[in-house]
Amino acid sequence: MLKQDENLSFVIEPELNPRAEQRIDLYFSIPNEMGINPQTLSEESYFNNHFKSHLAYNANNIHLPLVRSRFVSKNKGEQQDYRQNLNLFCYQVRLALDADIKDALKIDEAEDFYKRANEVYEQSEGLLKKLRRYTPDDEKLLPFFTNADNYLSWHVEQSFLKLLDEGPRSSDYAKERNDLLQFCKNENTYRAEKNYNSETTMQDANRITNKMRLLQRLIEHGVILQRQTRFLNSYLKRLVKGTVTAVIMAFVMVVILNARSSFTEVTATLILILGVIYGLREIFKEDITRVIWRAIVQGRPKWRFSFKNSITKDKVASQFIWLEYTRFKKIPKEVKAIFSKRRQQNKQAAQWLHFASETRVSAKEFLPGYDTLQQTLHFNLAPFARYLKRGEGKLYHLDSNKISKQAVERRYQLNMVLILTEEDKKLYQRYKITLNRSKIVNIELIYSTK
Image (tube, rainbow, N blue to C red):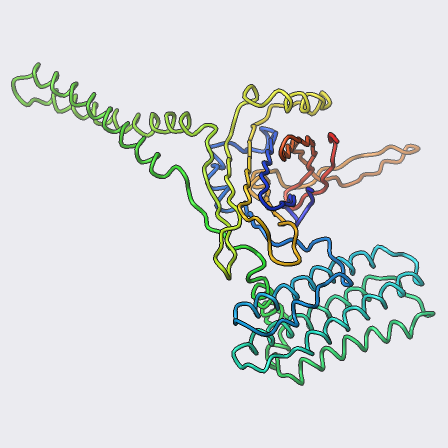
């Protein structure tokens, strides 16, 4: 469920059923030497810049033979219906092809590898033919087809080139390899004959890649749910700030009136006293407001996501987000017990950060062909690595009176406990995340309940 994404990020990808309710809690133990605290990294800053959440109709476990080609054949009816059916087909093909290519690259034996690669080739070719068989006659629908056909052709070609580049090589299978290369050449020629991409775009690797990313987002329209974000406590925060200001001003006015009653004339002493009173007001107003605010919002959700179908605009799910620094004594006892199982050298002074996500699916059913939603929570640890020390150390060895040295890098460890709550079931897991200044070196599952 938790896996590394990019150099300094990881994702959590649970599934959701119709009418489901699911809660995910993460407790981070961040060593003090990493320099992360409410002053250096606020909850709002991390949420706005380094956290992402999205929902999509689930096709992650699908493979090419399971792709529902009936979607692309539905080219009649409303324009939005055709676009949604076409996008569903293309989305399934992309994810299924990625899954099959990844599985094929795990095969080390050349014979089994090329046998599997040929199966994926035949399935991909068949799906592309089905897509092109249902080219729409309506000029209004043709741009949707052109974008989908252009992207899938390019993505299939890139996937097989990657497969051949990273897979095992053997002279015994030169024919199979040439057949796959010819398939890639045919797709390249097909796009050129259709004038899908200009010559200038084709000659610039950055331009063609960015164009295909744009087309990928277009075919995700209606599949990945549209998200709206709302900060839940904005009015409450204004109320707290206004109340604190009113109370402080009332106290200041009482002090000023008492001071005026003691001085019959405006003197330098009176002016100095009034200046000190107003100065103290400015000094303590922000501090008092901050303390009261943190006490009020402790344990309250701070943000709410609403997820809607981007085509029909129907609400599918809502999600509440908590993110706050906390103290060890406020952590649930089950989580404390899991953290206490760490080795003694890992029990160092730490800052505790709590994240929680509570998702409620309001839809009774999903689009045809989809039984679940795939939730993706994306966490970027780049701000956690901001204050880490640079450079490498050296480790010396003595071998038969000969001294040798080996370069070693500085590494840091985050400990994290994950709690997944669904209905009456709870899953507890502890992960050890090892990172340096540039990347996550390793994510290791240390403990898990069944």
